[in-house]
Image (cartoon, rainbow, N blue to C red; front, side, top):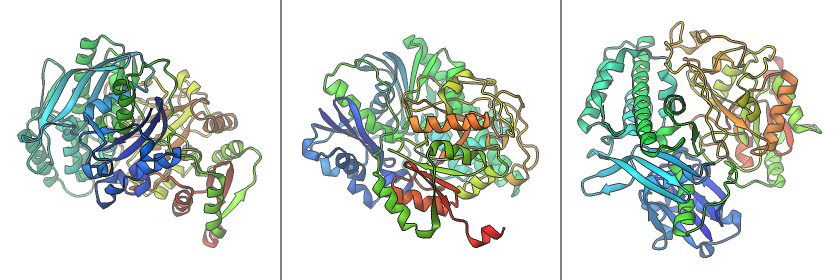
Length: 583
């Protein structure tokens, strides 16, 4: 059975092709349209992601047995497939994207986002949080929380996602940039935590309530606080305090929901889906502060992941297939590009690139990283989801002087935003990686390892309570901020300058079975330096999607002025300009 699943809502459109229950290909529309988050526009009609998947598999729409997607996808995105497309509940598609690829035979599933399917379109009632119990091929709803949309579509009551987004917007970040609010929250104090408590309530069944009036009052409070602040450091601190407060309350809301869900299901396994769970700090607390013992988070946890979920639902539920042996899945679901396409992209770069001859590209890349080079990686199929896991990554030795500021400058990103790390799964499991020379030592409290679709556990570390704000000078001026005041230990080699201000980092664990080439590079780097961790960030510029094609990789590499490009099985060095050589 060949199934085409479509994902998205009014943004984050995507497609997934499933054959006999196995994912052949999946891609986010933004990678093809080159418009971040792929918000609905004229190009939405083209549904490029579906065409990409079909072309890669060498099939046409006529060969597809079922086309399925969530019922809140902008209709223009699936217009070409009407009337043949089948639509399903949005939160159920999210739940399927989390449970079916998980390593669990049974699990509790929690879905939380900004808004899901309309339950009553005329009265603007939408789903906001849904609780499920899953086992075998069945996903059974336990409870649903619904909210009402405001007339301007901006707010939704009883929505944890819109609660967080309201603060994101009021402190000056645009929609879909909640990760910046999370980053800034680490600089805040608890000054606004108690006032925020008045804007929502929790019930005895794991639920969260917030009226549209309370959301407007929340926005008014933040505006008033910002209006009383002077520019510069004081204004930044006010924004950070608001971010800190909403982060504290989001974590409280989700912990409350998960404790209820555990009580109802009795399961030790928890699966999460929905854009709220892009908040890795909140996810980490769920594993540490609820009774669940194991946690699974799909790589595309937001609306794009609904393409995978709907396709898998079509296979297991509509197709009536048995969910048998749980084979490790992979997040590398994009199509691989042939060597000829990579060579053509390099040739078009002319004199800006020169090949670095190497018998062992992973060993040579590791050596170049240990010498302080910024290395971009473009290999095989792209990762599905917002996190780079080694096929569309920029890597760096975080302890090498100047690398953090160089990366921020190259990617044109704010200095207050932390970086992720990548390491071997075996080292993530040890918890005490070997100490490397020249590397700063810092305890990464709240870090978790998440290697993508085949990782069963998030590994928590550090204290359950949020530490005091860690900036030592003026947080409004990152250049004036010293390394965060976090506990220094000899156990985990992490550059403090790359962490959040509260001393946290996000770790991505890689196994040879998941990504043999990246695992080999990490093995070589650890052998050379004694350090198991490499700084890992997505191969893109700020505000752009991750690169998809060889041509985009070369363009981004040169524009960011990185040092080395690992493309396929070859290494290339950026030729320095005459001015750089003289410097």
